[in-house]
Length: 146
Image (cartoon, rainbow, N blue to C red; front, side):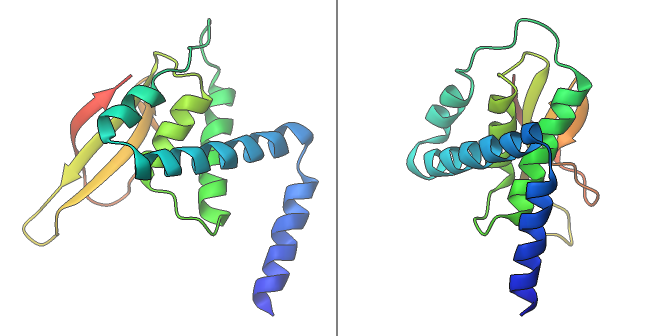
């Protein structure tokens, strides 16, 4: 019973949003699904190349646009029954933001004496993490692209 009332609340919240926010959430969901499918089908090299093909915006990105896009990817990822990895989320947000040169997707690893090996991807804009921030162990960046 709680599940159906939660779905109703989620739907009501979605419908209460403005048209621009709803459209952004729908675009984020569609793009996440595409990148998830591509991630399963393509090699990392091809996925990376494809993720970087979108033409950048001619001007600077506004903080509002970056935050709104990161918000949409986070919300869709959290509410969707489909699981989206951190890499898929970072690539999707970068693509939705036009592959702007101020954006960097970083991949890092973490391994300590007590923790198992772990990998993580995140998106930075102007040196600040906007999607995929971690509050636990620090990941050592191994790879990045802009």
